Image (cartoon, rainbow, N blue to C red; front, side):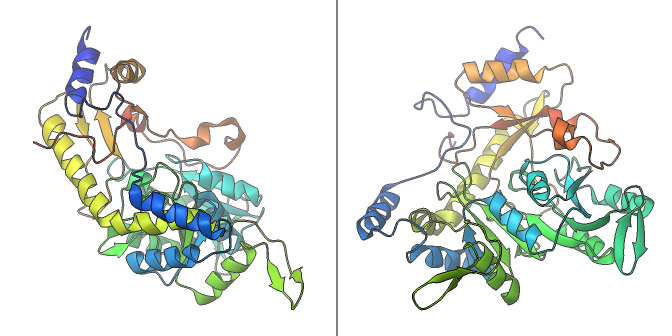
Length: 389
């Protein structure tokens, strides 16, 4: 094992262009068209929440995802917060959340005093393990008045927020069926999954709500921002109202009729997204090419590791390229050190978030996961930074 880290690092380094000194994990593609539209918005002075590009960007999202309503907000986390708020989630409720996850969904639950209830994920999909979930709910749930309660805590299990980890998808139709059976509200955390489909239907459009993120590292960006997706006219109207500080406009005055949130996306950010989304199909095509290229040049030739590949035939966006370590003897931190020293900006995947001190107190499925998720490394995933042979 003496030189294996150097060998792996060199193998990966050869697959990326050498003209860029550092191969970034992911960075936005911003070109002249973004600069031109930003200049146009700045010259118009409509850089905040007033201006035409928020609505224009929303229409583009709606057309691409085929959802009735897309409401652009300040972040994906704010979209999760609004989703839970409009699902009437409070301190008497539990929300099913995958352990292998970004922290946003757990935090959004805590904003409202609700308890995140952590469930296991599948190695095959990186999302909720649906077989384990069904067995688990049968074991820990009781039904009263059409509602589902956790027999151990007495709280109602009212919602479920699956996460499409790194843009990869799973059988959301089956999860929707489980949620319907137990009267659990389905909210899809599709923050990383713009351009991912399950059975030709865009993810984030199966549940009561879906959310997207346009952070700087996402497949397209607005610098910072997100979107709430829903097919309900009423919920869309409510979401727009409370995310705009619950303003009620009078003739010469503004009133507020309930607690509201300053979550609207600024026109300046929306203008970038409006331009970026025009290139989304092209970006996804390049992402798919990168995934196939890495699979061909790594998975088929190495005994130590492989590139993660969507295994259920669904159409994912391949936003992030994942290196799966197969050899148990390889120490992941040592490998990451070699990769980064060799100008390959790589890092660990998420860990199980129920381990954090402030979340340890909440319900959790007994940990039956093996060490799979601790063996995932994120590789540079800019679709333009690889050698196409």
